[in-house]
Length: 124
Image (cartoon, rainbow, N blue to C red; front, side, top):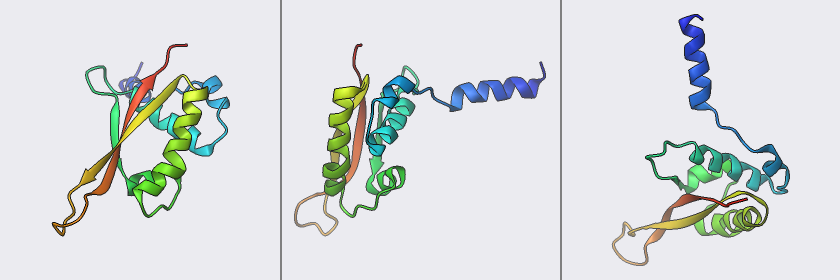
């Protein structure tokens, strides 16, 4: 084979993830389907790398096609509902942690800055 063809084949293997279609068809929410794609991407990380990813509110809004102004609202409207559906119907799910940042004014409560998503694989 030509060198270019071999490079393209290896590129496909590295850049794309496989998604379990049967698992995907059980889901009803569009946000759950998007989360499965994110979780499969996280699952594709190297064995030596933790299966987690951190996202800001802006990144989450872009990924899910939403326009929330507060991370807490995104958590209540999207993450909690998606987590419940994936826990009930999917072979993979997630837990998340809200990361807080010190208030830049130096007074008051810290504010939610980002969310870290950790992959959970359930045994069939």
